[in-house]
Image (cartoon, rainbow, N blue to C red; front, side, top):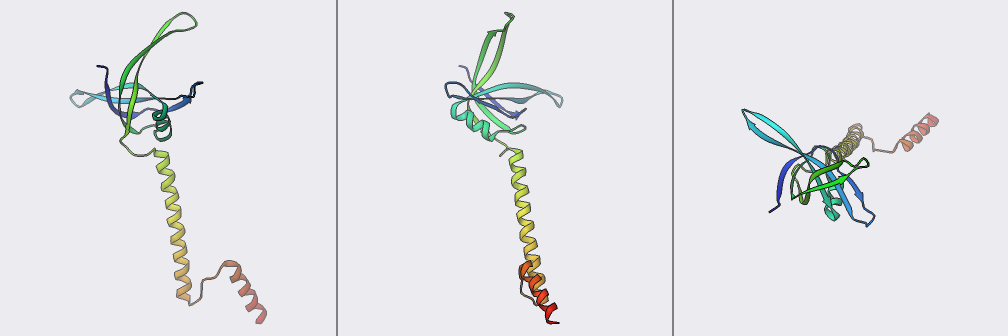
Length: 156
């Protein structure tokens, strides 16, 4: 049986591309830790490949540092380079990827910044309304306020 189960963090953002046949493929690497005793850890790095719809999902939603659980199989590829030297690459072909740490960090930061700006705008609007109410004046737009000031100046 050829089955791999890994839990780790992405070491880089996924690289997604489309083949000439139209199939999507995404590649990324995951770091896992092995506890070797006496409070020490050893890091292992695994190359991960996903295909088709899973590749599109991984390319869109995964990012560096995110924790994932991966289920798949081991595959070793070999090829000869231009100089005739044989190379081997072992990778995990994933058929299931589960996000364990939520959304991408940069997406979360952008949403947090937008929410902070929206709450500031509401806070300033509330402060302006309270100040106008305390002064006993209706809240008017800045252009209308300028026209009112000009009218008072002319009347005086």
